[in-house]
Length: 426
Ligand SMILES: Cc1ncc(COP(=O)(O)O)c(C=O)c1O
Image (cartoon, rainbow, N blue to C red; front, top):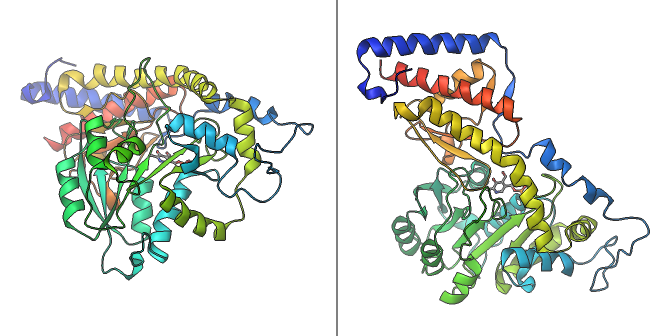
């Protein structure tokens, strides 16, 4: 391959590259691969790190929490004090302003939207009585967030993601002028999929919003706040601290979980918000369930001991994930760098690499990969309603495959990018 931008290729050079790329693609097809990098799942070795947690509790141990609650029994809807203290230390939030739930933070997000829809929050009418409810969706974003709001029939409005967070001029304009705008989805640290970390300035602008709707809430999903790939990660301002500064105490719901710390599907989730918001949510959740799994909460606390225990455990995750993310960067640069036909994120943490293909090529690339045995996240998934207006963004999820498989998948991916780009500009 000639090392220069594709736009500078002569007709003959393009023809040669097309031929070479078609042959490379056919060679991949002949391998009958069956590889999957569609979802950001932890790899088995990452899950193995938490296996000792299963022995953290024994039948001889006391199951009585600090406040006298028996973890084997009902009670303590919002979690035992020990797990609240742990999440509080990690999230920089007072333990008194935390609700620790079951195994999924997404479930808590869904609950918050559902409560607002069915009963209403902050003394405002239930959202189901409104003609239209709107949410802002920074794009590219997390498909399951968009899935929640689509389920409730919310009108989703895309907002471009910039280097340090969503375009705050656009956010502010919508939030402060339109009372039907009731929420925004945010992943402030290592956003899914772009890996963007919101700057303190962005966090402060969120905290200073003066929403037209009293029941507007920021859905601050801190799913990746512990998931660093670098030695000295940034320490972003917390939304809680920023909202205390601005006096906007009820403006946010902050979510986190140990899904990608211990076991995805058997971790512990947490919600941090104001007393008023907590009271509203606890009331509804207390009707839905008598309590969450406190034995799992205790198991996590005994296993980790404290916040430093969690941080050292995350360092072990980093050692597994870093070579995979490095391999993705290396192959993208090697195969596509000189051609200058695509851009991609270089995340310092989180679970994804966000790839921007030439406009109109994303669907074609995903289907070419699929035909050669590599499943990627569907093109469009990172946009509301699954529609990427540019048909350009593809979310790459390097965590699950082994390094060798990942390298193979990435080589095929780059071949498919070249093929699609050459076809599109033929
Ligand atoms: C941004 C984000 N939030 C939430 C989740 C799911 O979290 P949980 O397992 O706690 O429901 C994911 C999983 O990929 C995610 O990427």
